[in-house]
Image (cartoon, rainbow, N blue to C red):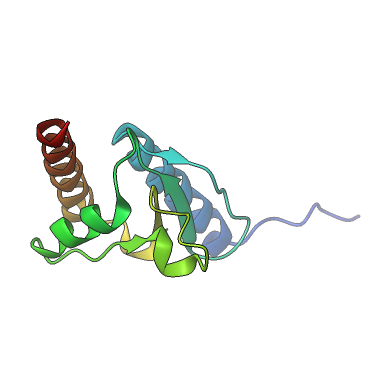
Amino acid sequence: LQFPQRESNREATSRKVLRFVQARLGYAGLDVWTRPRAGMFVWARLPDSLDAADIARHALGANVVFAPGNVFSVSQSATGYLRFNVSQCNRPKVYEALQRAMESAAARGARAA
């Protein structure tokens, strides 16, 4: 008699954490466009043409480090994307800093327009 292989606790926990991070980013208004099967990074598109480097600079003031997309883009065409380390996204501080940074960037953009 053979039983279907059960996933390990670690795999189940990893999947739950990933779903949590994707949900939190989506709630913050980001479009999560990668859903990795393995690994610890999620890519998300910022709303309203916000600049990821601007968001990252603002978040540094709250001691939160975000990875703007252009750091990973040779063509520098990823200004509207952030890469998130899922293993570091379990703290409310991350989402609070993200929300404040996005609000600040949107306000600056509205004043510039």
